[in-house]
Amino acid sequence: MKKNLLPLVLLAAAGCTNPSTPASAPAGAAPTAVAPTDSLQKAVATYIEANKAEFPGYEPVKWGRPVVYTRQSEAAIKGVVAMKVFDDALVPRNKALANYKASLARHDPPARNKAIETVYGKANKYNDSLLVIANKFIGVKDTTRLGTQLLHTYRRKDNAGALVLDSANFVVYPGGKVELL
Image (cartoon, rainbow, N blue to C red; front, side):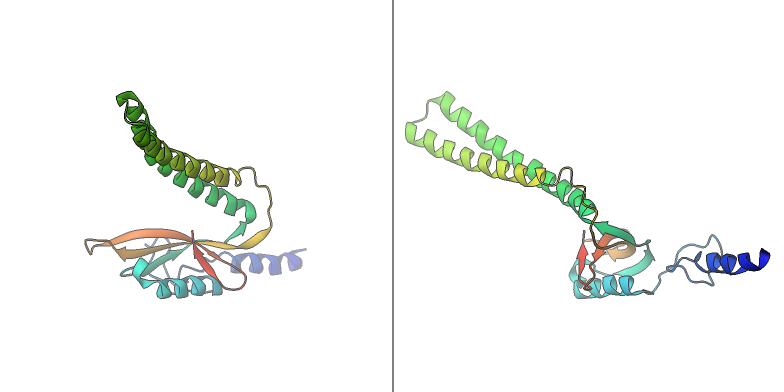
């Protein structure tokens, strides 16, 4: 029985190393900048290189574990983004509504009321369309794999020129296309 366990123990031990940490790093050591070691990391590094303006002073720090990116996870992310856009659009809509109510209260001429009402109507229609889009992402249960999600921690220069620690999630699709989430 011991003879059969040895290959399993060796196989398990071989899979326990973190690809983003150099094998010679002592336990508990602070993470150091690492070069991409696999095709997912290289795809993300290529994306960052092609979009240097978004990553000024880029220095890699650490790579997260790859995670399956499905239609369900895509819907969750896009749903949050859509709701943020909807919420942001409420401000001008509410301002347009307040302007319309104020116009009615002032007894503005009918032509002016109509012009202000038109602005409010457009803002309201825009908000309604955003809400329809956001609602499409609710309750998506499709677990079809779309790609692989990868968290990457890096240093970059902020607006003042200081190096700051930052991170971002990327999706690498089967064809090699990379998208910043």
